[in-house]
Image (cartoon, rainbow, N blue to C red; front, side, top):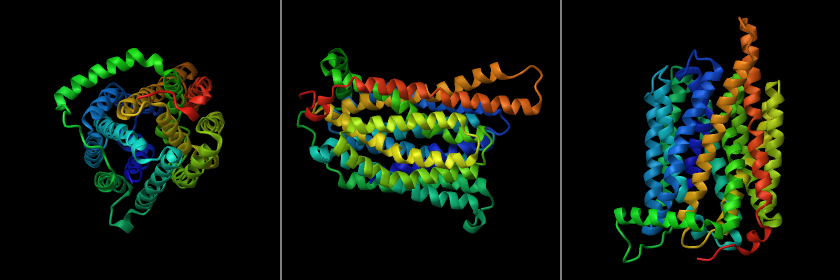
Length: 430
């Protein structure tokens, strides 16, 4: 149910309305490549904060058996920040980025502790299926609220709203209520081991967490399959997260109508629901690693196609292709990693997992922003006409999306180096 809860933020805010509203409202009148860079660097800043905090937070939570309290604390930080987007005024792009960054920190921080609960609630033989079910419910729940939010923006008068901008701002409040309300199921239903009688206080747990992290960094060579997988994950999930965050912005830069782009995101959600369940079964039959390879291959094809597409109808076809693999690659990566890590240190090791995911979310959006700005500078003729400026901007955007191909290719090469027996036998002991 927590996947169902927090996917509203990932769908309506992160992938859907924030990029559109940022370009058309908060960053109104700004050059398309500059606004892409602003959005990319803002997302990268939030990722950097969480990347630095994630392993320490995980180690502390393991030591205090406080995963659920940390989960809810970060979740409600994200809920509050999301609600506050409603009051950010037109043209206040810097404030919008700051509040969005806080929402991302809450979203990402809560996921560290949510993911760490997976090995505790899923039997070993069902971990792929349980992980995939979570992502599937996330696509369904996030998609249902997103569909309602889209209807609000298409027909604001039917909801008693003056215009589409008011509908988008109200949508941010609806996400906060959805995320905060359904998170209570996790608080009430999900079991958590009791803290030991000699469990330290928070200050002692932080100090102990620092010591454990230092030991983990020193001894990480003992966990070679874990180390190689994390390196692979760093690159390929970077590509996945960047496409989630920047696809709508890219479509706007090419001149596609925002209504078509938002509708394509809805397609991703409702294709993603059954596809995530299918990938869970595929992971059990093929093995998670082989299924992840399939997803990376499809993403590489989508990236090349995206850099070359010329018609908005192609965006819908790409949405179907992404929907088929997006939930699967995330779910199977989580369950594959859960098999590799030592028991009793799940939050700590999922802290590393999410740390690399957040470092990846720094690299991808920043790479797109940087490549787009550099390409625009190189492609822009002297004293350009208005038509030449538009053409140069769109070509620069194509180069920026094409740069993501490097991340998928590198991730695939590293994943191939992970010992295939690790998935079947496990690699580490407590």
